[in-house]
Length: 480
Image 1: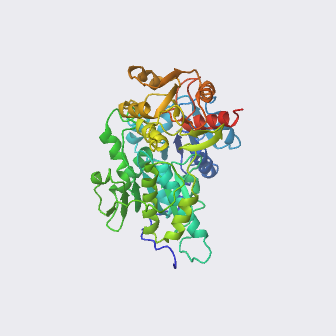
Image 2: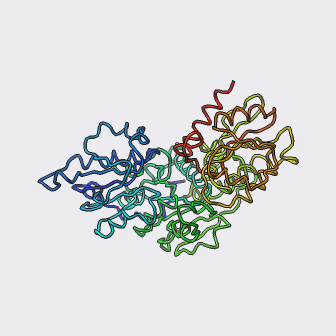
C-alpha cells in the first residue's frame, strides 16, 4: 500500500490567528468536562494581547466567560485557569450586556434553543459560533465526523485507533501526517487543536446533536460522515420534538457534495437524503475477533471498518486493531472480577435504549438469563429525560435477578412499573454497590446501567455521567 487515498476536500481553512486577533469574545459555558477549559486557555492566548491601540475600552473585557453554575460548582475548572489574567468571569448567571458590543460569541453545547442571550446577540448582528464547528472551518484539516444516538463514541474511537495504527505501521508510506481525535470527547478541546493540526491531517470527531447545530449554522458537513442510529433522547431539551432532534443530527450529511460519503446504520439509512454517496456497511465477518460485548458493537465495528476501507487501510491492519480494542471507559467496561462476579460500568447508558442494549449484551446468550446463578444485578436510576421506559423495563424483567434503584426524578417514574425482579431503593451509589455485592453469587454480573441522566442534588446526583462512572469504579476497586 502506497498510502491512504484521501477523497476529502479541505474545508474553508483560514488563518486562525488573524481570525481571533483583536476580538472581544464571550464564551458561553465553561462546564466541568474539560472542553470549556481548553477553549478558554486557547482563547486567552489571543485576548492577552489586548487592548491594542485603544481598540478595547477598559469596561469591555476582551474575554468574558459566563456560566450558570456557581464558582463553587465550577471550582475544578476554575483551578486550571487561575494563572490566566485575561479572563473576566460572570458565574451563577448570564447578563445581556455580555452579549452586546462583542465581536464573537462562542456558545457551549446544550445552550437552550430559546436562549434570550443568544437571541440578543443575533439582534446585535454578532457572529455566534460553536467551538468544534469553528475548528472545522478554520483548521484546513480533513474531517471524519461520527454521530448517532448510541455508539458514536465507540465508532469514533475505533476509527481513530485504526488510522493511528496505520500511520505508525513500519513499511507503509502514508500521505497522512497525523491523526487527531476530538469533538464530544471527555477532556479534549477541539478548538485548542488549531495550533497543532496541519492541512492534510485527519481529524476524527465525535459529534453530538448540539455540536452539529454549529455545523448547521456554518453550513458545513464532514466529507466522510457516519450516522450510527437514531433513538429518542434529549427530549427534555428538544421539548418532545423528535423532528428537531433529527434536524440537528442531519447536519452531519446535509451539506455534503457529490464526492462525499455518509456511512449509515441500516435502521437510519432510509431517513438519510444526501447529495453524496450513502453506504450501508456489510456485517462484520463472523471470523473477525472483536473484544467487545454485544451485537450492537459488531454493528459499530462494521461502520468503523467501512470508513477504514474507504481510506484504503488494509484488512490485516483493521483486524489487528479490532482484536486489541478493549472499548471505551464507561461503556460496558469490565471494572473488576470479584469473587467470581463480573462488575461492569455502563454509566453512559443514559437512555432506555442504552439500558436495553447493555442488558442484552450481558444476558442475551443465556437460556435462563435471570436464574439465580449467572444472573444480573442491575444498578439503575437517576434524572428523568422524559423518555419511554416500557421496552427497557421488559429487558429488566427478562435479564435481571435484582434491581437496585438510585434516587432521582427518573427513578420516581419506575414506581408505575412492575419490575418483577427483586428491587431495592438506596440512598447513594456506595450503598448500591454494597447491597449488590451482598446479593451477587459467583457467576453473576453486577452492572451500573442507569438508563437515566446523572444530574440532580446529592446524594443521588453527580456532576455528569463521567463523574458517576469514576465514583463507581473507585468504589468497586475498593471492595474487600
